[in-house]
Image (cartoon, rainbow, N blue to C red; front, side, top):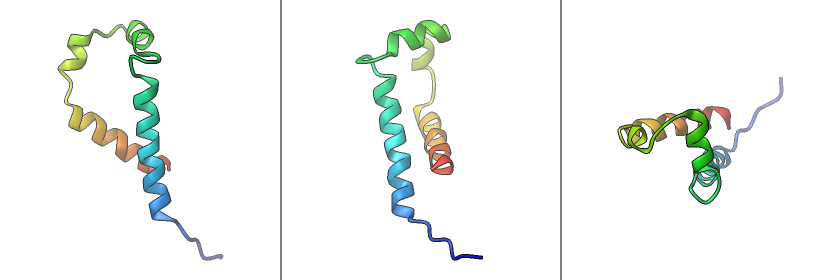
Length: 66
């Protein structure tokens, strides 16, 4: 079996860029209003969410995917 080399810095950067692209995609500049309408969420419901938990899990899953 071949030696497998994983560039951990590249994986970390890809996970960060995944979050950055998602932040831009769902920002008011692009598709925020449409996303809210399609998911039937309100801004008050979003304000009640725990951002540390949300972004922490999103980053963890981004690392796994990357």
